[in-house]
Length: 351
Image 1: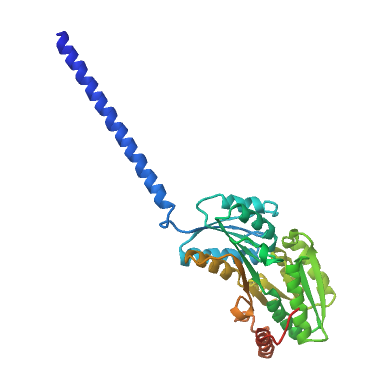
Image 2: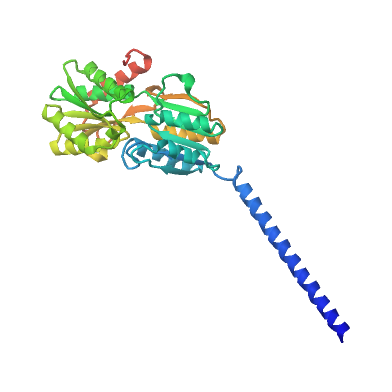
């Protein structure tokens, strides 16, 4: 009997050892499969992922930031990319938001939207030399200081602003018009300069009121202050006001509706903000700049450096369509189109 019991115990031990071996083998095989799956998901089989940090005012400004978001949506639809965005609120967390995206291995390209990102994007790009960055409205002082992994995107805002200024000069019935800038800065001064020069080119007798909301980025998110300035300019006789103030511009449109006066939008078509009062909008093709940069990345042709958009490549323009053509005569448009061609040919210099 003892011998038989020993045989039974030995057999049970063998069975238990066999079960343990099978279990260990199965677990090891499952882990390897997961590793292979994760590895392949980080290769070319996965869609490109892009990160974007908004300018002050954030998404929903119906202007600059929304134009950038439209570019992401177009790239998602047509190029199959994925994207994430961050709204840094008052802007104090811009650099940390850029760094957050840069530290992630799945993010291939990071956008900073707005000239105030220039220093932040330079700092983070140097810290992450293997990541690719693009800055919309990058403030270029010395081209040699742009990191090699950064694409600096600029627009010739003065060209489009000249044309809408010319429209205002030809359209006004009071010979008084206005301009509202969000932040007193070199970039927004380009809008003002072009607008004033275009207005005086088309109407030498015109008077232009100019005001700025702030000297800090908060000027891009203060519709109340913009409305106050607009009402003041309308009271002084201006019958058309152009803004370059992001989210703050919504205050101008409220004033235009209240006073039954005219306004000019910026960055994208802003007709819907005050239908019948918005005679045109100066268009910056921010969405196309975002989309085009992502397309270059996908095609393996992304390079750091400078890319400038202007009238000559349709990166800048103005709105004339079924909505506003009843507000602008053919004579006005013909004159403005002639000016547009002169700018392209260098016969009109904006300074």
